[in-house]
Length: 396
Image 1 (spheres, helix red, strand yellow):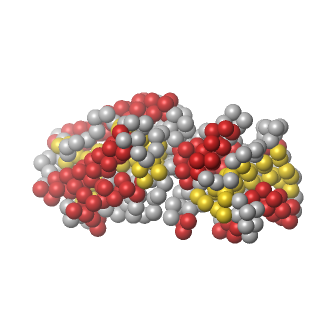
Image 2 (cartoon, helix red, strand yellow):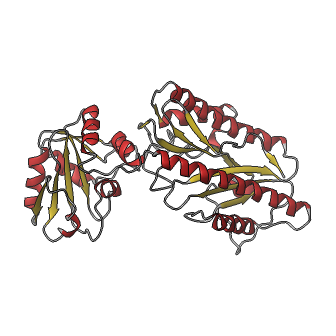
Image 3 (cartoon, one colour):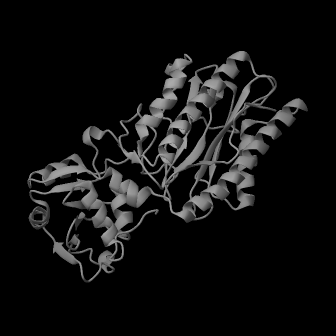
């Protein structure tokens, strides 16, 4: 389920997960929003400017350690659970030490900074916790389980958005091709605006406008078209469109589609086939693991895709991870990524975890290609969206 908050009703689920993780408890910490995972799972919001902790033991009731002048935000803290109040740093450190001294505890920490999306606890705070004799281990799989998992409603929302996003992407490519054939080539930013307007008509939200990259511009994975630097989409090169949108309160659909304006060159086709086959290699591994009901690490899926592109001779041009987490809170979420390049992604992908699969090849000054679909790892199957994802280069 997505962002399952700690409550009297969910306490048993949390503590069962802690037992499976082999820890004595989970220590949540936040200071001025540095750990949004803690704020979301605890339901803490409002005017919070002082440090707070919540100790969730594997057995017993949770304990909140809160500052004296910020009690209002804790008004909903269950009366059956303990809350202690501090003013001085001496009192804070004493309270925390009494809770975790000598215990094995989970925190939002990644050894060596391997997974920066999870590494939310400052080094100084880790030092302080360790002086109590506590052993700190990563809460990575716990975060995935309680924060990043999709509910059935999340998946349904995502599927609906994915259909609309795919249709809009195909329409945008067709429009660019028609304009070029008619001798009135569209500008990148005009196609971008067309897509944004279609999202608005469909009632979908998006964090920022889509990426429309023509020819060598697509060699920059974060390229942004601009009316200040208009680029005409003309025959003879390829067009990359990366677009993302969500229903209000839903889960994002994030896709990348490729087309060629006219017959693609053998070079373009070889790059496209490498990217497509790398995507499909990752999907095959993920599907196999899902059907076998075997969790898989995000780094393994990245390795499967990267091996294909390296084997085709384009390895040096695949310069980013294969995919990113998508959770209910964020397009680039806090669950496991498909990554063994930028980070050492060792977290497990298990039922309910959603993510993108988007290998790419980027040759500066020449060409850029990417193919992106989304997945949700289910119990016995792999959901891939959109249902009709791109198998062949679109020729428009």
